[in-house]
Amino acid sequence: MHWLVVLLIAAAFVLGKNMSQLPNEPSKITPLAIHMTLGIITLLAVVVRLIARFRLPQPAHATTGNAFLDRLGKLVHYALYALVLLMAVSGISLSMQSGLMTIVFGGSGAPLPADFFDFTARLLHGFAAPSLLLLVGLHIAAALYHQFILKDNLLARMWHAK
Image (tube, rainbow, N blue to C red; front, side, top):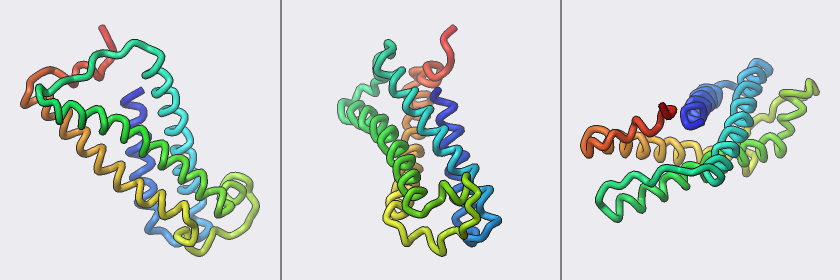
């Protein structure tokens, strides 16, 4: 599930960033549909991952030997979940506030809103995206630190068990 969520987040982020440069014209409806679908699938995948995380046995947290860094690592993991959930909820809220569901998936024929920044949820969605990207970068840096500096073979834990 980890790598599926990674791919979904990356795809949704890249599409969302590219799509934000497009004018709100009918040609934007297809990219919006893909972005919204990716967001919903990501939300479902993260919920499944969280359920699995709390119901299945987990390996012990990787340690750095530094209490502060170990606590920071746990905090970053929970913050990643929180930000992904915030992205999904703010995206759903934005689609509800702006009527996107009926425009994009319902074929209402109504025009897209002139500016998505007119909606409060867009501000939250826009705040969460770079915050999530920053935490993902920190997460990657920590994984590489474990793998190449501490040499504790952390990356092997992310693959399927033998």
